[in-house]
Image (cartoon, rainbow, N blue to C red; front, side, top):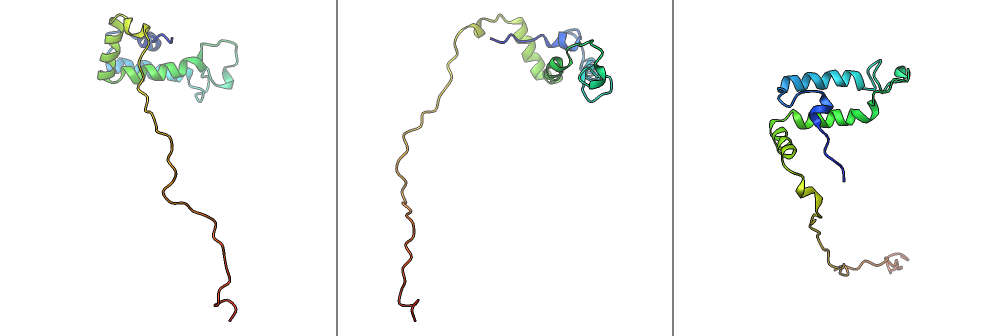
Length: 122
């Protein structure tokens, strides 16, 4: 089972960070890790062997910012951090919609048989 990452550690901000601090940290990390920025860890120019995990960390950075920038999702995330993880350990019931077997169509279409009529020969 996938463990929920610590978004505050991904963005390298404190848990008490303001929205402005989160935005600044996100932009700074995107400048470092974005492949389109010259010298970014995903670009070909950064082939100096110092890999800071750009390809793997870029989606994590974007996900962390998406969660922490919105006050409601951030509050929900903070609640999941403080709550014990007992609800994740058990099996979860997933509702499944059962479809009845297909019935034959109401209208049956057959190939058209063309016949010569009295109008064709005259």
